[in-house]
Amino acid sequence: MNQQQVRQYVERYLSAFSTHVMETHPAYLTVKLPVEVDKDIGNRPFYWSWVEKMNIPPQPMILTFFFDPENIPQGMRGEFVHFGANRLQQMFQSAKRHGRFVCMYEQSQSLPSKGMAAGRRSSPLTPWLGVNVKVSFLCDKKRDMLLYLGVNLYQPRIVHDFYPFLRRLSLSPAIPPYHYTQEHRITIAQAWQMIEREVEQRIGEVDQSWADEARERLEEELEILEAYYAELAMREAPEGEEAASAEDGPQHVPEPEPVSAPVDDASPSPPDTPAPVDLGDFRAGGGRILDFLRMHAIPETPREAIDQTAWRKSTPKEEKERRIAELRWQYEPRIEVQVINGGLFFLHNIPPFSS
Picture 1: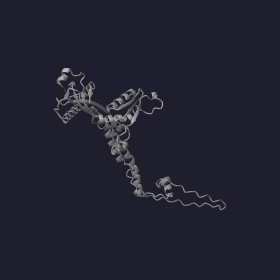
Picture 2: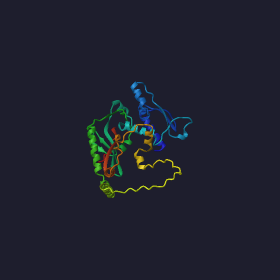
Picture 3: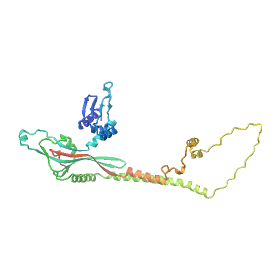
Picture 4: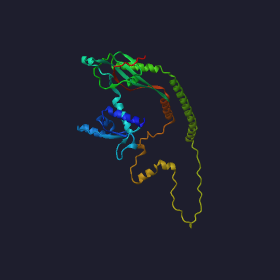
């Protein structure tokens, strides 16, 4: 999205909530947020909880959104809104929360004639259930298929490309004058079952070679993983045998006899030097941190009282099982179906039917 598209979206979002525009400029926009918008993008949850608890009149925020920072008047305070900005992401989430399911009426392009107005003749509006569905084919790759489905609730049938058809119409949340809505001959649940069957049929028409290829790649990765851990087990086997033989029969190593050296009384005695400390023993003792704690008499938790299950080193078998689970999650073919949005639409025009 460029800055022009960002501004158009922000203006559409604010107008959908009947936001009071205090000042408009090619480079910025100053608005007073409605209560619903303030709760969604104002970042004041404690304020609104206090207002609702005390039952006092709220004071919505006044914000200025910058769209062209280079042309902002000197000293004006505001917030630069661009694609990727946190405020714009909050607007996306708010629009998704409030506008995922809607109820819209088609507006008549021509006003009723005087004779029709005098006779109070009305035109019918046909109810439709429109749903936008995303079907995702997942493995180590991903492919999405979008379905724009519409179900006629008066004469039960289903059509495709319903959303592109709606974009050509003039829709409003208020029913137009001299129009009435026809009754539903099927329920929303029955219409939803029709949509589910249509989605399953479209999925069945898709070439399934992608799933077979994903399973082949999964088998190749599992074979490589199996060969790796088989070789790892062969490498660790000799070390285990040497350790077992050392435990069975420890050999006696004769200690060297001490060699006495002549002592010269006249030579000065060397200064006392600390005995060398083995690095492994130093680390096992806790290192300098535990030395500092002991020096200052800070109580030390015994090693037996510390739960070290989370820090336990994984065995090769556990690592292998975890890696197999990761490979299956990555390569195993699966299909996910997600409803993006939908709504009830009362239309005068009828979309073209396609089986």
